[in-house]
Length: 452
Image (cartoon, rainbow, N blue to C red):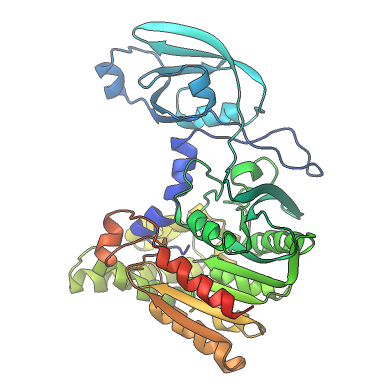
């Protein structure tokens, strides 16, 4: 997924925030890089920080803890009989006074490990002991699911595979997500668009693989952090994952495709330069230099938020000016904000990835990275996607066909937004997340069948 302003944060980093603040999940501490990745522990609560006002309303006095808003099914918290409305005071002897402190305690824990806890309920402190459960796995009656891993210079990375139960070598579709630091491994939410898409393709005979992001999910204690890796380092991690897939006995190594969602569509041709791909599908991606992309998509964002033409033009101007400070003059966000106050707000999202990541992305000639790719390319744009630009998909398809005539095709999907969900237009997309649009999967499957 691509970077941008207030709305891009909603798309790119909403999943990451939910992972950290909503599910209270964590990471495995003990496995060495040479070992198979273990599943991370699963506390399984929705939680929120206590404010001074909320403490007064609840009559908590000087008590410190976090509020449990919901206990999730199949979780450690459910087994320990935590309840909605409880105040979690401590875990394994460590006091917790924020959601982040809960995550910090959990980060060193393993599945099967016993722990103590203290909760506050109905004006009483309750002490108890429980055992950490690990994160659940996806299960489907008609498909096999495997949790594998690969190793690169930045560490170990998880791959989640869904495949038909039939024997023999299978064509592969590897899914790479967008720019945000969010996990692709959320078995409690299999309605997510990328999961639904991969399931559709697996049921049609493909071995589908979701390539987990560096430092997220099961990777977190075994891989360089997502917000620290460079663009090249992240690319190299995906290259290693694709090469590991090709080495499998159940894979047709001459029939490997990448589905690049948003920023994943930029990684894909770079991966193809290091390991051969039969085809690339890029959805909602980036096809022009970064500042040009920003200018184009600030206009569609203005339309999505019903901004006046005057407001939209000012937004475009400010973003381009701030981006120049950041990318061209190499200023930090704070330095850019001193030049123009709104740069602090607009450029702050860049700080969610590393400076090296952003600079390496900015340096790319996007049409140029597609030049060496001799396989087939499908560019897909949802007509309700205000985060990416239709023109960028035209640029890529034009570039591929310029260098390799007839190799690229572009298809538009009605009522599909950036997340591959159903939305009637830009405005409806920004108001809320609709269900997955199955037309996306149909179009992609039809194209894949033509490549057989």
